[in-house]
Image 1 (cartoon, rainbow, N blue to C red):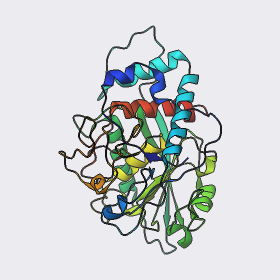
Image 2: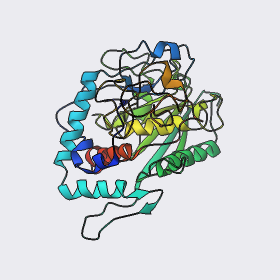
Image 3: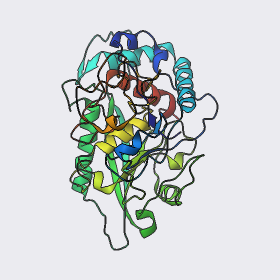
Length: 356
């Protein structure tokens, strides 16, 4: 499936530690593919969308709409897969994952006992970057921008971006950068899903030609994009390896022209989807939100683009998670994952990507 995000109420971190099945992701039957894209939807139009957005990130004030949304039924099916996958993991692996994530913060490891199986302190993810330019080279990004983008990603996943940010075990390692001059691919269009026809075939053509590695490797495609998109990603339960990865608007990289969405957080957001996170506002104020126990419920309306820490759009406990990477705020606003999101990503990695 393509990624999306869901909102849900704040619960104690203790709830995360009680059982591995909280965040399970499994390979139980085929899932209907849903694209997770980042659209340039306007704040006004966002409220008109159904409760789910795809794993995309939108610009506030744009003139487009989120190209793909995920229904409540699709969200439920995704969670069933997650739960089944976690249940199928060895008990020791589930315990080690919880211990690693919930006992670690900002690089300091606590409460780990030698008789329990260990996960590596860092899950290294080889990252292959593919830059698409126009035939005359227009639209290129520099290697320095790409290196800075990698730093932004790793800082976010290490929990270095905020005093309240959770640590995650993921470390992204840049393996290669390649460039392709292709006018058709540069104006990369939305690939579509079972309900929305594709605007063109760029996604399949470019990815099939350029993709490297396996399910445990991250492929990042950078292009001019079309249809007002900032970026989109695939969920880890997709069935076609060649289409796996994320697509980014070139101007969303650090120093790009898409201010205030030009500090690199679109990539962080999309990798969250690549590791099976949903939007914080998924399902709005309705249970189960984004399927993560320690993110507060967040209404799916114009508020998702705001950065007001006092926002409290749902009756459940907790103010809106406006600083969460999986919300739709602009880059200066987004600076954290939660421990629950870190654990969900870790389980998703074990079930869908490691060894697949």
